[in-house]
Image (tube, rainbow, N blue to C red; front, side):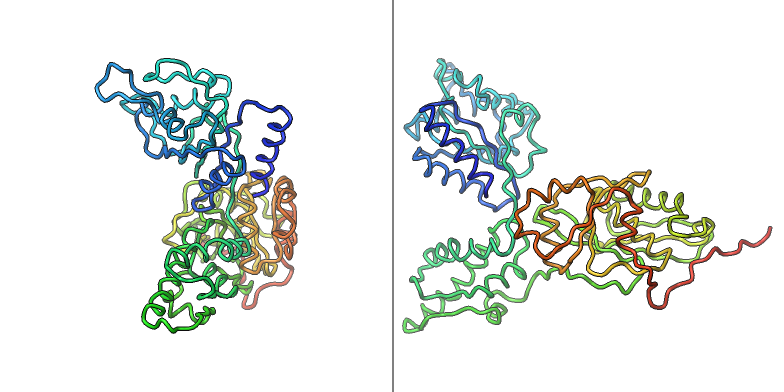
Length: 467
């Protein structure tokens, strides 16, 4: 969490030099369970200020923010003033939780627009609560908003906040979080004495890899709680029971069978099978794009695998580019009218969308038509255009972690994504080589080997019968 810590240190430095200044409005955004709300409490402790938390999820009434006028029966101040009264301080750390889930355009006004006054450092020095009916100075309050998806926050509101991304954790980070925080917390919650339960490091890693699939650590905490409850049962049955040590082999008995298994690289023995990298809300994943050819007179393109519109368009783009640049692959243009193309992205039941599989699909189709092998342990991500340009995509950090988990050693990226790589700490990048490209032909030079696959099909034009 370097960025967050750095920002708080800057805030403290300015406070030390100036003595007093308008507090910034931060927005911590990222997947669920990464500790955004807990971080607010830590910031309050670090600044030695009072802590107030208000959950805005599902808020639909503007009066919840601004208060009711005193003429109404049951009138009371808004959540902001109530929070300050509860804290007994004019400069607390004020957490606005789930700001992306505020209802918009409801019958009771628009609460997200009412928040504009609260979160604007220029306006909130004279915040007007309808119940108090006098201006109140909120400029000393340090507002910290949390959100899962910043796309749901209205533009004017987003513009008033300083965005800090709190991204998911890698296995090593989760292991440390479990060891230092989650295990002691769950042991105390389940009545276990200190030192009575030892979950070994390999066992923690096995729980993370095989029993959870998330960016944060909420599911991990539940699984550790389950292990603690099993241990509590044993101690309750036999008070003389010694120290319990949990190893990876014990997890099946304690937690049941593994619900997840990490995707592993599947080799390059087949033509037309290429590994892509995908971003999901629970972290990165690898996915396979498979292309199969069958004889047919129409040259039909079929797409399966529960693909969204953007992904379907990427496949059409890739196919059209290969048709118009057949010479790059030494193909006879007539071959496209003689073979039907079927592109499939497993797993079929999971919806997939987004532009980042563009170069993966283009390489998959190219490999199927040329029957050339794809370079071993290679994955790729990038968008393509009809001119064959490779465009940058997002979620690079999560995608790299997914590639490393699957045993990938080479990753093909757009040259513009180099800036994302430069921001990622070196320990995340070790063991992976990056190839930066600008055009799809450069991707093929890296990804496709001269060697053909075993039992290669002969992809030649079929003679059309004379009419």
